[in-house]
Length: 118
Length: 111
Image (spheres, each protein chain N blue to C red):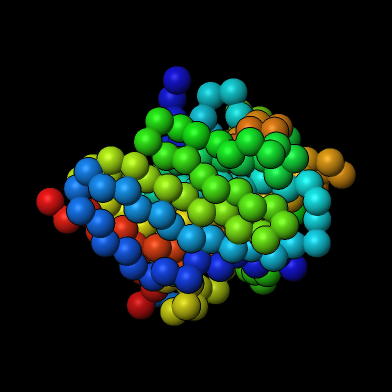
């Protein structure tokens, strides 16, 4: 079974600075996808960024970027120029590849609570 | 484009009762997945529906069941409620090869 581990229960960063959230995962599959989701106090889970395992290039979405190290099974999220609105729980998630059909349920880590200091 | 919606937002039930939660998928999506999120934890996959059939299930007992309708909306039913069923229930919709997009969730409290 796949597992996702987020070793930082809580992180704090000053507004406008950069913060990196860590995630490691365990899988025996070669085809898979990784995601970062953000869950603010409103509870709605919001997709931040997605990475396909077959792509060597790290995904980037505006101020959010990932460092995907496939051999090390590591998938960290970097947030640049942190803003107050970035404060939330951040979840790393894994899903297997689309080949072979069947369900594509996500496996989530326990989350990292990100605090932005003004 | 209409996002994923869920109803109700909050619900209180007593042990042994049954509950039905509802989810409307995002326009263009034909797959719905349900998750249970206990307080302070990450979501856990319950099951997924694709074209009105259950497409896969996580480690949840049969008293958790579901339906998907021709318009791709979905229901999650939980029978014989237990105290541990108290959680946030999240619905996510997707289309083949897309990411999953979540609704705002239903908070269920079992007393």
